Each structure stands twice: as C-alpha cells, then as structure tokens.
Image 1 (tube, rainbow, N blue to C red):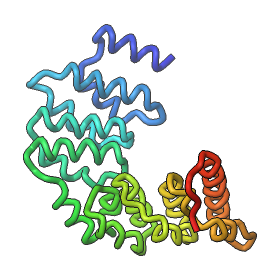
Image 2: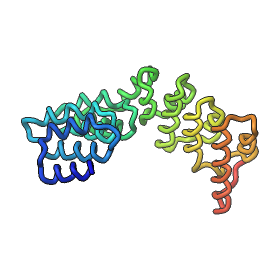
Image 3: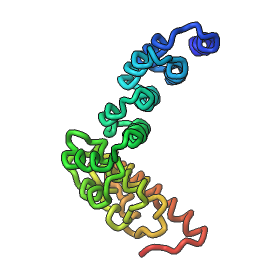
Image 4: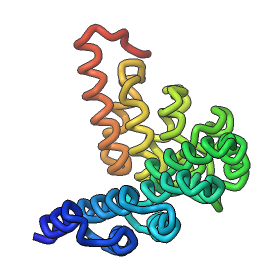
Length: 231
C-alpha cells in the first residue's frame, strides 16, 4: 500500500523534489520506495533547488540512493565531492563515484593507489581497479575486509592466478573464503582435485568445506564439458 501511494504521488507530482529526496535518504527497509523517490527527486529538480535535492541522497544507508546522489553531483558541477565515495562500501556507489570523478577531469586511479597505501582507513579501496601488484599484496592484509575486496578486484580485472589464490580457501575469515571461492569458480577445472578433497575433511572450517564442495562440483561440470583437468 505504501509503495502504491508513493507511485501515485510521483505520477501526479504531488510531492516536491526536496521532500522526495528526504524520503529517499531517511526511509529504511523499503528499497523500492527509496529508489522511486530518489529518481523522481532528481528528475523533478530545477536549477534553483538541485543542490537541496542532491545533498541528502549520498548520506542514505541505501546503496541505490547513495549512487543516485553521487551521480547527481555531476549535474551540479561538484565532481570533487564524489572523491569521498571512491571507497564506499558499495561497489555500485564506487562505480558511480569513478564516473563522476572522471567527468570532472580527474583520474581516480592515483587516488585509489593513495588509499591502498593505508587500506585500514579505506578498506573498500582495495575493491578498486588499482594495479594488480598492489591488489595481490593486499590479499595478505591483516583486515579480512581488505583481503576480500582485493580478491574481488583481481577477479574483476581477470587477474586471478588459481595457484596463488587457492590458499585463501583456508583463510580464517569466512568472507575471504567466499570471495576466493567465487573468484576460483571459472578456474575450477585447473585446481588440484586432491587439495580440494582435502578441504572436505571434518577438521577443516565450515566455510572451507563449503567452498571445497562447490569447487569440486564446478570442476566436475567443467570436466564433463571437456575442459582440461588440473594437476
């Protein structure tokens, strides 16, 4: 009922853009309403009230709303404000921030490299497309969230080296194990079957056992399609 009411209000333009923006930024638990209000607020904002509409959105807890707000910074010429979102916890928001920063004439890569020099302050910066050597170094960082982001970034860069990544299936953090398993899925056929089966042992951590089982299943499917087996 609430969603229907907001759809009608948006269709009939019953709410001003500023109010829609506040709703998008503060409403919780209903992504549909938040996204609807954010999109409608940005679409209906005029030149005079655009700043008031954009300002609340990047502070939202919703990644969809934050991404809309960050993208909206471009229309107000506030490209540099998007730099603060390059290390956002959401990959969607980070992508929007990179777009806005580039549109403002700044290359985000040096900024990411600077953040990766101290990933404890900016853990999600490890999920950026920084240079591959830096990302491999961060797979051994003390913070699990940094290790997981680095693995995901290597995967997005198609820079996964299965032999080097496989030890992370025994990482103490379940988040890192899951990230490593996802990255290794396309390379399952090349993995050592005996090592994967060893990961099923009862004395191994539950995330490791789950990852090993899923990779063995992926390996069986790949070999059935005629893929070349690993060692």
